[in-house]
Length: 338
Image (tube, rainbow, N blue to C red):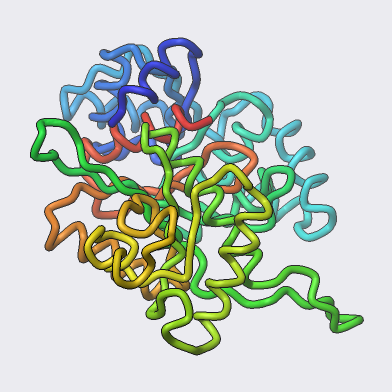
């Protein structure tokens, strides 16, 4: 599943920054990335602390760059840049206090072009990784929100890989209309937000070699049920079709109709997606988070993510319970999806 990403990295050398340089899992993954010659690595932390931790684990990180925010020679320039970006929302003292932390410092390295990608969260919370990205790197042109995708993979019976994409399972708790506080006018509908998640998740799926067939999931199939989220997913389907006419997307669909060809013949026989969907979009985080974890634990799938979508640069979050293999894999995903 990493073949396309590794080919991208081999063709276009990139630099990733790890916000938690002294962490043993980060150091083990760094040693492996450098040995495999996949990317350049920046480790944030005190030089002595990072080197001692690497020596203790017998990890060869001699090819990595270690940057200590406390001794960074360009700190004044970085602080002024961040101060200007925050436009009065942070005073200079707060800016400098934040830049002493690996999450803000690493994000500014990406913002200033010193690194191409960032991976954090081995000790930071998801919010502490995402917040600096939203404040400093911000969403890419045309994007209205940040979302997430998980790629699920397991060996297929034919010897290949069975892969699916699922979004959003980690970032957006629910979807509501964006309303102008002064006029009361709806400026962005909830359904339009989900359509954007669907399109971004399809792009992520394609990067992993999945030909995306997108199912907008619900407890209803083509009007069999009623309710606010049913209407929302139906409208999201139409919005996605309008925004991406070449994308195979349909809904609203129950999961069995989306996945099973037998059920699809009964519930949605004229659908171009039902019975063959491989990219699943959930109506809220409850359904998404539960859904991917059921697939992971009961279906025996490996789950890769959350892969953040919609940002101006590739920035991703690790689970605090991650191991070195997961760090290695997520580094390839993060740098390879630029």
